[in-house]
Image (tube, rainbow, N blue to C red; front, side, top):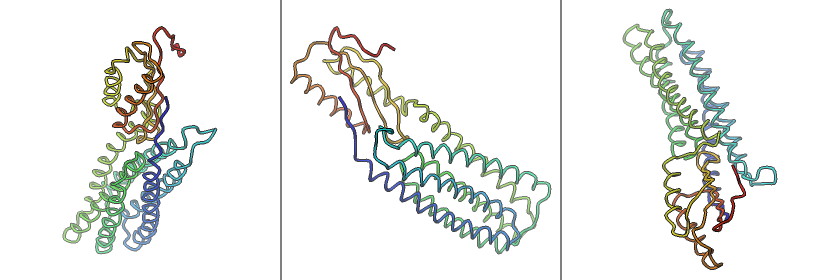
Length: 297
């Protein structure tokens, strides 16, 4: 018994559109950052510009992979290209970790040799940075894909970075404490690094076809065993194509012989019950009493 859900294409079109829009916004602002960093002589802004450049590249990769993920199934990729989106999330998480480590290597030495930047220019760029990156993060916050969630952490990191620059710029307009810049940079980078590592762990688990939700898997198992026509089940596999669209395969051992109409009725009951879990694809094998399972392992 096979079932495939084709109602997710609109959702993924929206995902691709959001990521593409954020990419164009981010790369445009990165150029502004480089110019602003030179004009203000701010190493913090230049570091943020380099980090945003890395973000832009990874978002661009995610955009391409997201669009590729919308391609239809074919003889070579029978499940379609959805897992390319998951691969994009893995790449972006790694890029963000590398970028965060780079920021730490840049910020820690500045604790010993802090420099005073041009504070008025810092303040103006910080306000613009918070607005631009905050709006971009808001646009992606409505996304449900794992790819969008990882990219959203890119943008949240940028927002926090600009908040740090904004605070430092305001303080430095009144007191000469340039050491606040590297201190705040280190603080928000460690916070983001912690959260991205958690996302990377989730992505790796899904990439290795671990169950996306153990609670849901247990609920499905108990629900299938609750049917009086089913005596046992085995070879239950619950995994995810991209963190959003899940796949279920299972063998159900029947408790008694069923006639044609009874078999059809059971299939419909199972299908109706599984609708609540919004599975992208299901394959259910019904085994008659006394029938040996052809999958031995």
